[in-house]
Length: 117
Image (cartoon, rainbow, N blue to C red; front, side):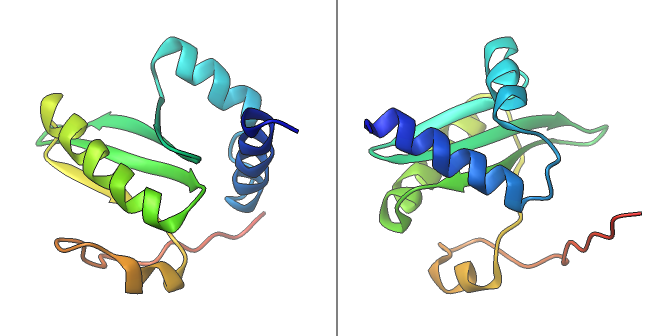
């Protein structure tokens, strides 16, 4: 299995863990149309989405798969890109264990809970 196939499997698994809000085909289509963006550092892949609100523009990191060290490098690239498109804020939801790896500037603003009905 090549690296691209491995990354696709990791991403599909991660998307399932986010509650099946979208699947790999949805992400691929959104990447093609530009409604989602892909960012890569070595074998680490992040998918983002830009949101324009009345008072600011945000970049939401939807999902990241790969290596923790590379994800920190990728964070810097995403931040630079976000600034270049006029974003005021980056948001992300992650597991509690990621908190110990955060870079300066991140703060907890809430917890996302979900209930299937």
